Image (cartoon, rainbow, N blue to C red; front, side):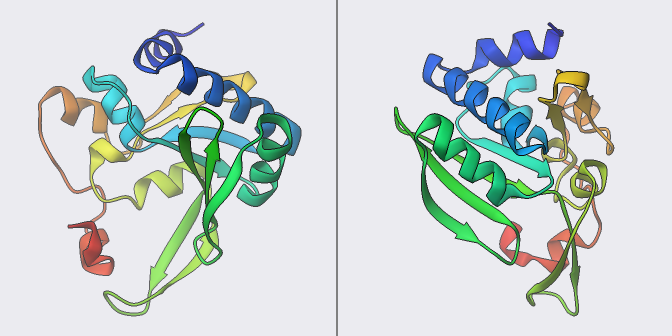
Length: 176
């Protein structure tokens, strides 16, 4: 087990740990690549309890959600077809967001984006802040691998906030 997986398990509640295991099993069944992303990774690396479980998949998030519902009894509470995102509520009260790794292209700032599938690296590079642009692989072949294309870990250690993508705040002002 990698140090990051050990760290993850120690920053999650027992119920959250069960949910992560169920989502991993569902991802394997749905044949998608699964990554824990965003605030969960930031909080774990910063030594804080993890409040939000956000997963990003290379593949079909709705296929993963269906498998998670069948395996873990999760119920869909919201979805965004445009962005390829779905929120699931698991037994025990844990809500997770599962999103497709994606690129977003905006015709003009504040407009609806054109969304296309992407790799996890491309997805992380489009995010707002470097400390939110990290992912942790939950795939068997690369379990515990930290993916940090914008050097967010260094910024977290320096307690710096740095924009990961110069256009992200202009394109999506709701991020502010």
